[in-house]
View 1 (cartoon, rainbow, N blue to C red):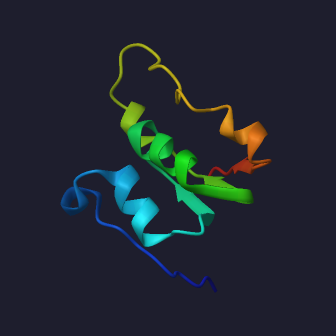
View 2 (cartoon, rainbow, N blue to C red):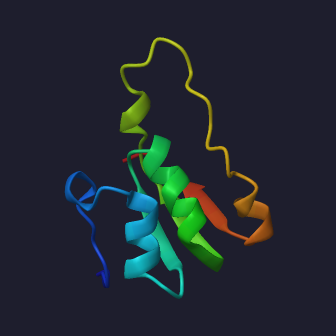
Length: 89
């Protein structure tokens, strides 16, 4: 059982990074990612220290003919001491 404090509809919020910051002013503790791309990059900005990322897909890359570039802010994994684990379901 999981408790969800905030869920955002990326189609209606406009600036996802700003929406995450407003919805979670103290940071995001757990982020479930099945999209990757810009969504993951926005989430990395919003993560609190020692937070967790659950990766279970990367739909933003499924139709790509070349591997897309990774998040430009991947350094947050180190500076915020994040735990990031992938799962195949």
